[in-house]
Image 1 (cartoon, rainbow, N blue to C red):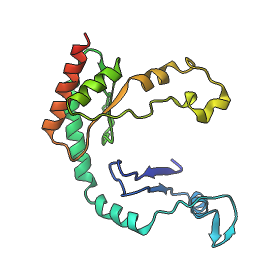
Image 2: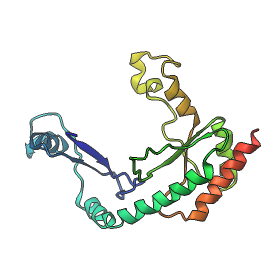
Image 3: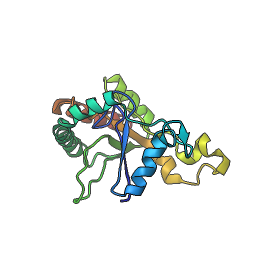
Image 4: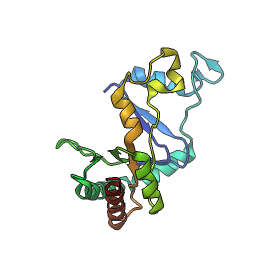
Length: 196
């Protein structure tokens, strides 16, 4: 890769306590372009060469991240163990698609996302049982206002639209314990079974 972008949004596996991110590259020319762009488009204060941004990682956030970085391997290992419980408990459940992990992959499970029909009713049942879920990206990009000028009609990207209507992010994080995850899985199975 020429360049990698990292989000340190507070809910990420390695999250700051506010907005933060980083860019890494081994290409010195690209690195210099990024340095200029992140600092209002200037190398020298008040001498803007290009239109840039105020996107510098402040020292306080960097300090928090540096401390939290030491915990990241343990946190990721914990997330991986919790995801394994979900994968085992939810395997083969009718009406539910769970993540597929190729043999070569080692995900760190920032999210655990499942797909099911009748998502809203399932979410309500989970919420009634004390399980908080989230919907990440409920509007497919082609149907959002940002791309309205492209005039892409509903139905143009059916897979994206189906996913936007059926994905649920289940709780997962280093603060959960295995019993929490088993409870969520059991409650989800009950919610799905009650629809039949």
